[in-house]
Image 1: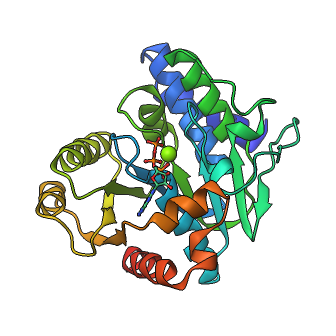
Image 2: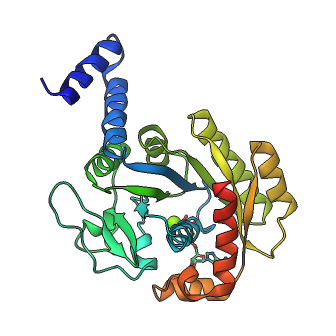
Length: 270
Ligand SMILES: Nc1ncnc2c1ncn2[C@@H]1O[C@H](COP(=O)(O)OP(=O)(O)OP(=O)(O)O)[C@@H](O)[C@H]1O
Ligand SMILES: [Mg+2]
């Protein structure tokens, strides 16, 4: 019997008497953990509120880390609206449809997205919860990242099936919570952080995006409520959306933006 097989049987024994669906989650988590065991740090970028800049932050954190000399992967786990490939000008890039799935490299960062598996990017992906859970689990389990220092994971908004699955299955080191200066964003950011903590995923810190450079009162409240640290701010800048629309990567092309992300990455590494 192979070592891995024996391992599975041991765990089966350990969880005897448990509800089968619960056992499946645990077993899948173990398989994903094994598959991602050559990755030193796995960090999710999350907020329950849509449009606050999760994808923008995730992409720029990944490239800022790459610029510091680390081996980096970027996982687009937003299965409903996988935007990473669009922001990176990779709409036409596909992963070879065979197992294991191999991420596609962009300027030295390995990128994997479910968008790279479908033929027509703009066709909406409409799946119910159980399919999403299955699909995401399969995707994580079958993607071969090789050795990485960091895997940055972009999540979709909300607190339902997809983020929940990621929190349960992906074994992240923690989350970077993204908010904007508005009170409503802060309230939702706190909610997001609370959910993560309840599921046992640490909160690594908070980024205020679309900022004027000084964290708002509401953002300070988020940091206090989650008992975490402020990682930094990213200024509200029309150039950010203009560049995203053209598939240009901010930290690789704009020094003022790069400085802001380098500061966040430095804080994150502390
Ligand atoms: N600091 C900023 N200044 C100006 N525009 C920004 C900034 N950050 C993000 N944007 C723009 O705001 C829009 C939403 O950003 P993004 O897609 O990153 O948010 P999101 O939280 O990932 O959204 P979703 O919830 O849909 O996944 C994009 O057009 C993006 O270019
Ligand atoms: Mg997004």
